[in-house]
Image (cartoon, rainbow, N blue to C red; front, side):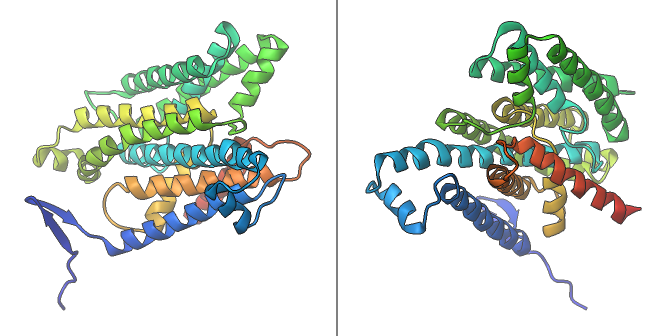
Length: 342
C-alpha cells in the first residue's frame, strides 16, 4: 500500500508542510468567529437587522446608532476576540511545555499572579487602566519566574512538576488577593471584585488596540517557537539530537506565553478555561502533529466571543461578567473530559 504524503510547499528554500484539514478547520473557525462578531453587533438593548448594520458602516445611520455600534459594541467584540486569541495561544504553548493537558496559564497560577498584582494596584495605589495593565503583566512575569525556578530540578523544568508547583503558587497568590479584597475599602473592594470576575464591560477602542498590539507582537514569536516545541514533545533527548537548546527554548516559550496571558488578563481580568479548552478543542478538530498555535488562537477567539455574546444576553437581572460564563462552561467541559478519560 502506498502511503499518502503530506503536500509540501517550498518558498525560498524553506519547506512548509500543507495540512489540508488544518486549513479547512481554520477557515471554518474564522467564519464562526465572524458570525459571532456580527451577532454581537446586532443583538443588544436595541436589536438591529442586517440593513441597519449596513447603514451604520455606510455612514447613513442615526448618530446614536453609530455611537452604539462603532463606539461600544464593535470594540468590545474585537477585544473579546483578541483576548481569546491571546489566551488560546498561551494555553497551547503551556500545554506543550508541560506535556500535560492541565498545563494552561489559568490552572498553573500565571493568570492568578497577574490578577493578584492588578488587585494590589487597584487597592493599594488606586486604579487606572494603564497602571493596572502594567501591574498585571509584571505580576504574571514574576509568578512565572517563581514557578519556573521552583519547578527546576537538575537543570530541567517541565512535566507534571511544573503543573503541581504552578497550582501551589496559584493557590498562594489567590489567597493573598482574597485577603487584600477583604481588608480593602468597600469601594475599592467592589472595583477589584468586579475586575477579578473577568469582564469586558465598558471595553473600548483603547483596549482593542492594546490587545491587537500584543497579538501582533507575540504571534510571530509563538509560531517560531512552535516548531521547536513540536520537536521537544518527542522528548528532550530527541530534541537535543536535532540541535534544539531545550531548556533555553522552554524558558523563552514560557516568557512569551505568560506575556500573552498577562496582556489578556490586563485588559479583561482573569478569564478562566479559555486557555485550557482552546488547545484541547484545536487538537480534537485537527489531530495533526505539532503545536497548533494558530488554530488554538482562532478557537480561543471563537470561545470568548461566543461566551461574551451569551453573557450580554443572559436574563439574570444583572450584567453577567464573561469570566463567570467561561468558568461555568469550562467546568462542565473539564468534567466531560475527566469522564471520558476515567
